[in-house]
Image (tube, rainbow, N blue to C red; front, side, top):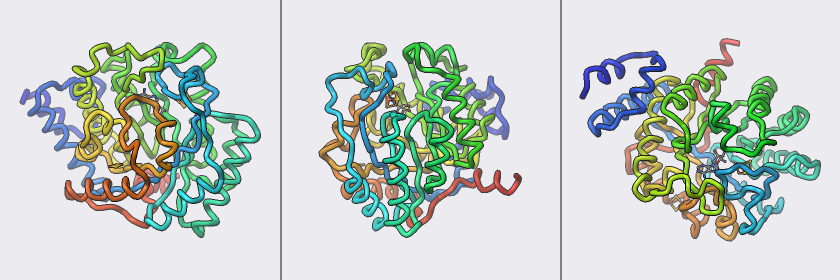
Length: 363
Ligand code: 5AD
Ligand code: SF4
Ligand code: FES
Protein backbone atom coordinates (compact mmCIF):
# COMPACT_ATOMS: atom_id res chain seq x y z
CA UNK A 1 0.00 0.00 0.00
CA UNK A 2 1.25 3.49 -0.80
CA UNK A 3 2.41 5.39 2.27
CA UNK A 4 0.21 8.33 1.26
CA UNK A 5 -2.96 6.23 1.44
CA UNK A 6 -1.91 4.66 4.72
CA UNK A 7 -1.48 8.14 6.20
CA UNK A 8 -4.82 9.39 4.91
CA UNK A 9 -6.56 6.39 6.44
CA UNK A 10 -5.23 7.37 9.86
CA UNK A 11 -6.69 10.88 9.66
CA UNK A 12 -9.89 11.87 11.40
CA UNK A 13 -10.81 14.80 9.17
CA UNK A 14 -10.11 14.46 5.46
CA UNK A 15 -9.28 17.33 3.14
CA UNK A 16 -10.44 17.55 -0.47
CA UNK A 17 -7.21 16.03 -1.82
CA UNK A 18 -7.40 13.20 0.72
CA UNK A 19 -10.93 12.38 -0.40
CA UNK A 20 -9.93 12.46 -4.05
CA UNK A 21 -7.02 10.09 -3.35
CA UNK A 22 -9.33 7.62 -1.58
CA UNK A 23 -12.01 7.80 -4.26
CA UNK A 24 -9.39 7.22 -6.97
CA UNK A 25 -7.90 4.09 -5.39
CA UNK A 26 -7.37 1.34 -7.95
CA UNK A 27 -5.24 -1.16 -6.07
CA UNK A 28 -7.29 -3.98 -4.44
CA UNK A 29 -5.20 -4.03 -1.25
CA UNK A 30 -5.64 -0.28 -0.79
CA UNK A 31 -9.33 -0.60 -1.45
CA UNK A 32 -9.64 -3.36 1.14
CA UNK A 33 -7.83 -1.11 3.65
CA UNK A 34 -10.27 1.73 2.84
CA UNK A 35 -13.30 -0.49 3.42
CA UNK A 36 -11.78 -1.86 6.62
CA UNK A 37 -11.23 1.65 7.97
CA UNK A 38 -14.78 2.70 7.02
CA UNK A 39 -16.14 -0.39 8.77
CA UNK A 40 -14.25 0.51 11.94
CA UNK A 41 -15.72 4.01 11.87
CA UNK A 42 -19.17 2.51 11.31
CA UNK A 43 -18.80 0.10 14.24
CA UNK A 44 -17.67 2.90 16.50
CA UNK A 45 -20.31 5.50 15.60
CA UNK A 46 -23.42 3.62 14.49
CA UNK A 47 -22.73 -0.04 15.29
CA UNK A 48 -23.45 -3.06 13.12
CA UNK A 49 -27.21 -3.16 13.49
CA UNK A 50 -28.91 -2.68 10.14
CA UNK A 51 -32.20 -0.75 10.07
CA UNK A 52 -34.92 -1.67 7.60
CA UNK A 53 -36.96 0.99 5.81
CA UNK A 54 -39.75 -0.70 3.90
CA UNK A 55 -39.97 0.86 0.45
CA UNK A 56 -43.36 1.50 -1.13
CA UNK A 57 -43.08 2.56 -4.77
CA UNK A 58 -46.36 4.44 -4.79
CA UNK A 59 -46.53 5.60 -8.39
CA UNK A 60 -44.42 5.90 -11.52
CA UNK A 61 -46.26 8.97 -12.79
CA UNK A 62 -43.76 11.83 -12.99
CA UNK A 63 -43.98 15.38 -14.30
CA UNK A 64 -40.21 15.53 -14.70
CA UNK A 65 -37.96 14.38 -17.46
CA UNK A 66 -34.53 13.72 -15.95
CA UNK A 67 -32.21 12.40 -18.68
CA UNK A 68 -31.07 9.39 -16.64
CA UNK A 69 -34.34 8.04 -15.26
CA UNK A 70 -36.40 5.18 -16.63
CA UNK A 71 -39.75 6.60 -15.46
CA UNK A 72 -39.18 10.08 -16.89
CA UNK A 73 -42.26 11.70 -18.42
CA UNK A 74 -40.90 11.23 -21.92
CA UNK A 75 -40.63 7.46 -21.69
CA UNK A 76 -43.76 6.29 -23.49
CA UNK A 77 -42.82 2.63 -23.09
CA UNK A 78 -43.72 2.58 -19.40
CA UNK A 79 -47.14 1.49 -18.25
CA UNK A 80 -48.08 4.03 -15.60
CA UNK A 81 -49.62 3.02 -12.27
CA UNK A 82 -50.56 4.47 -8.90
CA UNK A 83 -51.28 2.25 -5.91
CA UNK A 84 -54.62 2.57 -4.19
CA UNK A 85 -54.88 3.57 -0.56
CA UNK A 86 -55.74 0.00 0.28
CA UNK A 87 -52.69 -1.37 -1.52
CA UNK A 88 -50.43 1.07 0.33
CA UNK A 89 -51.97 0.15 3.67
CA UNK A 90 -51.50 -3.56 2.95
CA UNK A 91 -47.80 -2.90 2.46
CA UNK A 92 -47.75 -0.83 5.63
CA UNK A 93 -49.40 -3.61 7.61
CA UNK A 94 -46.82 -6.05 6.29
CA UNK A 95 -43.99 -3.74 7.40
CA UNK A 96 -45.56 -3.26 10.80
CA UNK A 97 -46.11 -6.99 11.35
CA UNK A 98 -42.54 -7.69 10.20
CA UNK A 99 -41.39 -5.09 12.78
CA UNK A 100 -39.64 -2.76 10.34
CA UNK A 101 -38.85 0.57 11.99
CA UNK A 102 -40.31 2.67 9.23
CA UNK A 103 -41.68 2.89 5.73
CA UNK A 104 -40.57 5.05 2.82
CA UNK A 105 -43.21 6.27 0.41
CA UNK A 106 -41.54 7.06 -2.88
CA UNK A 107 -42.89 8.06 -6.27
CA UNK A 108 -42.33 10.15 -9.34
CA UNK A 109 -42.94 13.84 -8.86
CA UNK A 110 -46.40 15.45 -8.90
CA UNK A 111 -47.46 18.73 -7.34
CA UNK A 112 -51.22 18.75 -8.07
CA UNK A 113 -53.64 19.08 -5.18
CA UNK A 114 -55.12 15.62 -5.73
CA UNK A 115 -51.69 14.10 -5.16
CA UNK A 116 -50.79 16.35 -2.22
CA UNK A 117 -53.98 15.52 -0.35
CA UNK A 118 -53.69 11.81 -1.23
CA UNK A 119 -50.27 11.75 0.45
CA UNK A 120 -51.57 13.73 3.41
CA UNK A 121 -54.29 11.17 3.90
CA UNK A 122 -51.91 8.23 3.45
CA UNK A 123 -49.53 9.58 6.09
CA UNK A 124 -52.40 9.96 8.55
CA UNK A 125 -53.63 6.44 7.80
CA UNK A 126 -50.14 4.90 8.16
CA UNK A 127 -49.94 6.40 11.62
CA UNK A 128 -53.37 5.03 12.49
CA UNK A 129 -52.91 1.49 11.26
CA UNK A 130 -49.50 1.19 12.91
CA UNK A 131 -50.69 2.76 16.18
CA UNK A 132 -48.11 5.51 15.72
CA UNK A 133 -45.33 2.96 15.73
CA UNK A 134 -44.02 3.17 12.18
CA UNK A 135 -41.79 6.04 11.21
CA UNK A 136 -42.69 7.64 7.87
CA UNK A 137 -40.19 8.83 5.33
CA UNK A 138 -41.34 10.57 2.19
CA UNK A 139 -39.38 10.62 -1.06
CA UNK A 140 -41.64 12.60 -3.38
CA UNK A 141 -39.41 15.20 -4.92
CA UNK A 142 -39.57 18.99 -4.94
CA UNK A 143 -42.66 20.51 -3.40
CA UNK A 144 -43.79 23.90 -2.11
CA UNK A 145 -43.17 24.84 1.49
CA UNK A 146 -46.92 24.65 2.12
CA UNK A 147 -47.00 21.03 0.91
CA UNK A 148 -44.01 20.01 2.99
CA UNK A 149 -45.73 21.62 5.97
CA UNK A 150 -48.96 19.70 5.42
CA UNK A 151 -47.19 16.37 5.15
CA UNK A 152 -45.12 17.09 8.25
CA UNK A 153 -48.22 18.05 10.19
CA UNK A 154 -49.83 14.77 9.09
CA UNK A 155 -46.96 12.82 10.66
CA UNK A 156 -44.10 12.42 8.19
CA UNK A 157 -40.81 13.09 9.92
CA UNK A 158 -38.14 12.18 7.41
CA UNK A 159 -37.67 13.23 3.79
CA UNK A 160 -35.30 11.95 1.14
CA UNK A 161 -34.40 14.27 -1.68
CA UNK A 162 -31.23 13.55 -3.58
CA UNK A 163 -29.28 16.49 -4.91
CA UNK A 164 -28.05 13.99 -7.61
CA UNK A 165 -24.80 16.01 -7.90
CA UNK A 166 -23.69 19.08 -5.97
CA UNK A 167 -22.07 20.46 -9.15
CA UNK A 168 -24.64 22.89 -10.59
CA UNK A 169 -23.11 22.75 -14.08
CA UNK A 170 -23.13 18.97 -14.17
CA UNK A 171 -26.71 19.01 -12.84
CA UNK A 172 -27.65 21.11 -15.86
CA UNK A 173 -26.30 18.54 -18.29
CA UNK A 174 -28.43 15.80 -16.69
CA UNK A 175 -31.75 17.64 -16.74
CA UNK A 176 -33.89 19.60 -19.18
CA UNK A 177 -33.81 23.40 -18.95
CA UNK A 178 -36.89 23.69 -16.77
CA UNK A 179 -35.29 21.64 -13.98
CA UNK A 180 -33.57 23.93 -11.52
CA UNK A 181 -30.63 23.09 -9.27
CA UNK A 182 -31.38 26.10 -7.07
CA UNK A 183 -34.96 24.93 -6.54
CA UNK A 184 -33.65 21.54 -5.41
CA UNK A 185 -31.33 23.26 -2.92
CA UNK A 186 -34.14 25.46 -1.70
CA UNK A 187 -36.33 22.40 -1.13
CA UNK A 188 -33.60 20.81 0.99
CA UNK A 189 -33.27 23.97 3.06
CA UNK A 190 -37.04 24.19 3.56
CA UNK A 191 -37.27 20.57 4.68
CA UNK A 192 -34.51 21.17 7.17
CA UNK A 193 -36.14 24.34 8.46
CA UNK A 194 -39.47 22.58 8.98
CA UNK A 195 -37.86 19.97 11.24
CA UNK A 196 -37.71 16.96 8.92
CA UNK A 197 -34.78 14.61 9.25
CA UNK A 198 -33.32 15.24 5.84
CA UNK A 199 -31.63 12.70 3.64
CA UNK A 200 -29.89 13.47 0.40
CA UNK A 201 -27.43 11.81 -1.92
CA UNK A 202 -25.95 11.60 -5.36
CA UNK A 203 -25.48 9.20 -8.21
CA UNK A 204 -21.92 7.94 -8.54
CA UNK A 205 -20.22 7.60 -11.89
CA UNK A 206 -22.45 9.97 -13.85
CA UNK A 207 -21.31 10.88 -17.35
CA UNK A 208 -19.09 13.95 -17.00
CA UNK A 209 -18.67 13.58 -13.24
CA UNK A 210 -15.10 13.84 -11.91
CA UNK A 211 -13.60 12.47 -8.71
CA UNK A 212 -13.32 16.05 -7.48
CA UNK A 213 -17.09 16.38 -7.95
CA UNK A 214 -17.59 13.40 -5.64
CA UNK A 215 -15.23 14.90 -3.05
CA UNK A 216 -17.25 18.12 -3.26
CA UNK A 217 -20.47 16.11 -2.83
CA UNK A 218 -19.12 14.88 0.51
CA UNK A 219 -18.33 18.45 1.56
CA UNK A 220 -21.86 19.38 0.51
CA UNK A 221 -23.37 16.64 2.73
CA UNK A 222 -21.34 17.97 5.61
CA UNK A 223 -22.31 21.57 4.99
CA UNK A 224 -26.00 20.67 4.76
CA UNK A 225 -25.69 18.74 8.02
CA UNK A 226 -27.84 15.89 6.69
CA UNK A 227 -28.82 12.92 8.84
CA UNK A 228 -29.11 10.33 6.07
CA UNK A 229 -27.34 9.61 2.81
CA UNK A 230 -28.66 7.50 -0.06
CA UNK A 231 -26.27 7.01 -2.96
CA UNK A 232 -25.87 4.49 -5.68
CA UNK A 233 -24.04 3.91 -8.92
CA UNK A 234 -25.48 5.53 -12.04
CA UNK A 235 -26.80 2.73 -14.26
CA UNK A 236 -27.92 3.51 -17.81
CA UNK A 237 -31.56 2.82 -18.66
CA UNK A 238 -32.18 1.78 -22.27
CA UNK A 239 -35.18 4.08 -22.83
CA UNK A 240 -33.46 7.31 -21.71
CA UNK A 241 -31.28 9.95 -23.40
CA UNK A 242 -28.31 8.67 -21.35
CA UNK A 243 -28.79 5.08 -22.54
CA UNK A 244 -25.57 5.06 -24.53
CA UNK A 245 -23.53 7.20 -22.14
CA UNK A 246 -21.45 4.22 -21.01
CA UNK A 247 -21.27 2.22 -24.27
CA UNK A 248 -19.10 -0.58 -22.86
CA UNK A 249 -21.34 -1.02 -19.81
CA UNK A 250 -20.64 -4.72 -19.37
CA UNK A 251 -16.92 -4.00 -19.05
CA UNK A 252 -17.47 -0.89 -16.94
CA UNK A 253 -20.08 -2.01 -14.47
CA UNK A 254 -17.66 -3.65 -12.04
CA UNK A 255 -15.64 -0.41 -11.90
CA UNK A 256 -18.83 1.53 -11.44
CA UNK A 257 -19.76 -0.64 -8.46
CA UNK A 258 -16.32 -0.29 -6.86
CA UNK A 259 -16.39 3.46 -7.30
CA UNK A 260 -19.76 3.59 -5.54
CA UNK A 261 -18.45 1.45 -2.69
CA UNK A 262 -15.41 3.72 -2.27
CA UNK A 263 -17.77 6.69 -2.10
CA UNK A 264 -19.82 5.01 0.65
CA UNK A 265 -16.61 4.31 2.55
CA UNK A 266 -15.31 7.87 2.15
CA UNK A 267 -18.64 9.32 3.32
CA UNK A 268 -18.63 7.04 6.37
CA UNK A 269 -15.08 8.03 7.31
CA UNK A 270 -15.77 11.73 6.88
CA UNK A 271 -19.33 12.07 8.25
CA UNK A 272 -19.12 9.28 10.84
CA UNK A 273 -22.50 9.17 12.61
CA UNK A 274 -24.98 9.54 9.72
CA UNK A 275 -27.25 6.81 8.37
CA UNK A 276 -26.06 5.56 4.97
CA UNK A 277 -28.23 3.35 2.77
CA UNK A 278 -26.88 0.33 0.96
CA UNK A 279 -29.02 0.90 -2.11
CA UNK A 280 -30.70 -1.49 -4.49
CA UNK A 281 -28.66 -0.09 -7.40
CA UNK A 282 -25.58 -1.78 -5.89
CA UNK A 283 -27.41 -5.11 -6.15
CA UNK A 284 -28.34 -4.35 -9.76
CA UNK A 285 -24.65 -4.66 -10.65
CA UNK A 286 -23.61 -7.49 -8.35
CA UNK A 287 -25.94 -9.93 -6.63
CA UNK A 288 -24.14 -9.32 -3.34
CA UNK A 289 -23.83 -5.58 -3.94
CA UNK A 290 -25.88 -4.59 -0.92
CA UNK A 291 -23.79 -6.76 1.40
CA UNK A 292 -20.71 -5.08 -0.08
CA UNK A 293 -22.30 -1.70 0.71
CA UNK A 294 -22.78 -2.69 4.36
CA UNK A 295 -19.18 -3.87 4.54
CA UNK A 296 -18.01 -0.55 3.07
CA UNK A 297 -19.80 1.47 5.76
CA UNK A 298 -23.54 1.61 5.02
CA UNK A 299 -26.05 0.70 7.76
CA UNK A 300 -29.54 1.04 6.24
CA UNK A 301 -31.41 -1.33 3.90
CA UNK A 302 -34.65 -0.56 2.14
CA UNK A 303 -36.50 -3.84 1.50
CA UNK A 304 -38.99 -3.47 -1.32
CA UNK A 305 -42.62 -3.77 -0.18
CA UNK A 306 -44.20 -3.13 -3.57
CA UNK A 307 -46.44 -5.87 -4.93
CA UNK A 308 -44.81 -7.98 -7.64
CA UNK A 309 -47.37 -6.89 -10.27
CA UNK A 310 -46.15 -3.26 -10.05
CA UNK A 311 -42.43 -3.83 -9.69
CA UNK A 312 -41.59 -3.83 -13.38
CA UNK A 313 -43.29 -0.43 -13.66
CA UNK A 314 -40.77 1.19 -11.33
CA UNK A 315 -37.48 0.66 -13.10
CA UNK A 316 -35.36 3.78 -12.83
CA UNK A 317 -32.37 1.90 -14.27
CA UNK A 318 -31.78 -1.37 -16.08
CA UNK A 319 -31.12 -4.59 -14.20
CA UNK A 320 -33.08 -3.74 -11.06
CA UNK A 321 -33.23 -6.89 -8.91
CA UNK A 322 -36.22 -8.64 -7.28
CA UNK A 323 -38.62 -8.03 -10.18
CA UNK A 324 -40.39 -11.38 -9.66
CA UNK A 325 -40.25 -11.36 -5.88
CA UNK A 326 -42.68 -10.03 -3.29
CA UNK A 327 -42.28 -8.34 0.10
CA UNK A 328 -42.06 -11.61 2.02
CA UNK A 329 -39.36 -13.01 -0.25
CA UNK A 330 -37.23 -9.86 -0.05
CA UNK A 331 -37.61 -9.74 3.75
CA UNK A 332 -36.33 -13.29 4.21
CA UNK A 333 -33.65 -12.90 1.59
CA UNK A 334 -32.30 -9.70 3.12
CA UNK A 335 -32.31 -11.14 6.59
CA UNK A 336 -30.19 -14.05 5.37
CA UNK A 337 -27.86 -11.70 3.53
CA UNK A 338 -27.32 -9.52 6.58
CA UNK A 339 -26.78 -12.32 9.04
CA UNK A 340 -24.39 -13.96 6.55
CA UNK A 341 -21.97 -11.05 7.06
CA UNK A 342 -22.30 -11.18 10.86
CA UNK A 343 -24.60 -8.16 11.31
CA UNK A 344 -27.98 -7.95 13.04
CA UNK A 345 -31.25 -6.19 12.21
CA UNK A 346 -32.78 -3.48 14.41
CA UNK A 347 -36.33 -4.85 14.40
CA UNK A 348 -38.97 -2.66 15.99
CA UNK A 349 -36.73 0.41 16.23
CA UNK A 350 -36.92 3.65 14.29
CA UNK A 351 -33.16 3.75 13.98
CA UNK A 352 -32.71 7.50 13.80
CA UNK A 353 -29.12 8.34 13.05
CA UNK A 354 -26.98 9.22 16.08
CA UNK A 355 -26.14 12.33 14.07
CA UNK A 356 -29.73 13.54 14.17
CA UNK A 357 -29.97 12.90 17.91
CA UNK A 358 -26.60 14.53 18.57
CA UNK A 359 -27.48 17.56 16.48
CA UNK A 360 -30.78 17.92 18.35
CA UNK A 361 -29.04 17.99 21.71
CA UNK A 362 -26.80 20.80 20.53
CA UNK A 363 -29.55 23.02 19.19
N1 5AD B 1 -29.19 5.05 -12.24
C1 5AD B 1 -29.06 5.12 -10.91
N2 5AD B 1 -29.90 5.83 -10.11
C2 5AD B 1 -30.94 6.47 -10.70
N3 5AD B 1 -31.91 7.24 -10.19
C3 5AD B 1 -32.71 7.63 -11.18
N4 5AD B 1 -32.27 7.15 -12.36
C4 5AD B 1 -31.15 6.42 -12.08
C5 5AD B 1 -30.23 5.68 -12.87
N5 5AD B 1 -30.35 5.58 -14.20
C6 5AD B 1 -31.97 7.61 -8.76
C7 5AD B 1 -31.94 9.13 -8.60
C8 5AD B 1 -33.22 9.44 -7.88
C9 5AD B 1 -33.52 8.12 -7.21
C10 5AD B 1 -34.95 7.94 -6.81
O1 5AD B 1 -33.15 7.17 -8.17
O2 5AD B 1 -30.83 9.46 -7.78
O3 5AD B 1 -33.12 10.49 -6.96
FE1 SF4 C 1 -39.08 11.78 -12.02
FE2 SF4 C 1 -37.36 11.36 -10.00
FE3 SF4 C 1 -37.14 9.99 -12.29
FE4 SF4 C 1 -36.51 12.59 -12.26
S1 SF4 C 1 -35.44 10.93 -11.11
S2 SF4 C 1 -37.77 11.57 -13.84
S3 SF4 C 1 -38.01 13.38 -10.80
S4 SF4 C 1 -38.83 9.88 -10.84
FE1 FES D 1 -35.40 -9.14 -2.96
FE2 FES D 1 -33.31 -10.90 -2.39
S1 FES D 1 -33.54 -8.80 -1.88
S2 FES D 1 -35.31 -11.30 -3.25
